[in-house]
Image (cartoon, rainbow, N blue to C red; front, side, top):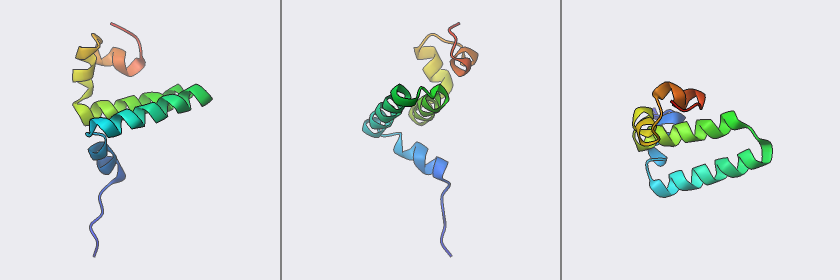
Length: 75
């Protein structure tokens, strides 16, 4: 029997590589410029933040609260 991983686990593992994360965010930004789907773009940012550390660390680097980062508003 095959052992399968969840896609999310694989996806986050791939985004730990800074080069892959940069490409992923570049594509997400290009998509946002075309369709203005902010939710999809923010999901991409969230995935990269999770892969590169965590939301709290990202919020600290950006001088935001966790809540502000989740809803897009500054502290």
